[in-house]
Image (cartoon, rainbow, N blue to C red; front, side):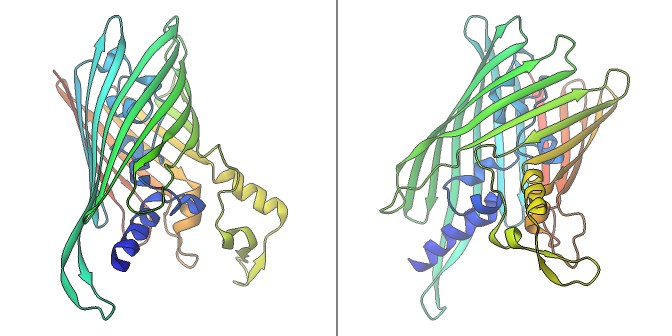
Length: 339
């Protein structure tokens, strides 16, 4: 039992990656980036309304007829964990546009051990999510509302959990399609079937974003604001201390430094370079990820992500890498096609 409980805590601390949010909630694994493009721009959602079905998986307000009959497959090698997504979109004239999604997270096998470390077999753990997203324009095809209904199933050895949640989002796209904005309330829900005696929380959060494609240059700029439901994104140590770059000594942070650090932890910046219609290259920077996971002595490029995509006549492919730690970077692979 102690091994199983320790494994539960490890999974959620490893996957949440949002400072004080980590370890408090169940099913945080489904807030990871689902596609190469989203991962490359540094976050787990984007506000680009261009018919990319992977955008509709995480931001239901931008599910659109441009995604009609598109399939998407995504796979991520996330250190020792593998996870992926399959999605299909269909539009009905009277009822709006839909995206059906299946996501999985496979944590692999872990050994049973007693208090002395003696092994006696192995056990597995995994998460699955079945989702159905819907969206419809409400004013002249510029304003959109959408929702994503999710059933989340988790198992750790013989223990089972079932949670339900809904994402609710509103979006806007300018008439010239260059500017988009979105506000989203994610994971409004609760756990129905519990792992054990206590009921765990679903990771509710509020996100917003803006994207602007330049009219006369091949760039799209993205600004994403995460966890607007809470101001404090710092860990306990980050609230009090910082390293002096000249002396290397630890000193107390000023109130202004604490304020600025907390404000930047909500911000994710992304740049998309689109020199031709069939190719894009993305770069993102996640300040919160960098502050939480970098080594002070060797910060390297932690918090920076990048990726590219190729659009062919029948299908699209994408690849991305996101630097989480010096120990390595996850690889994201995306494949998308249309019937």
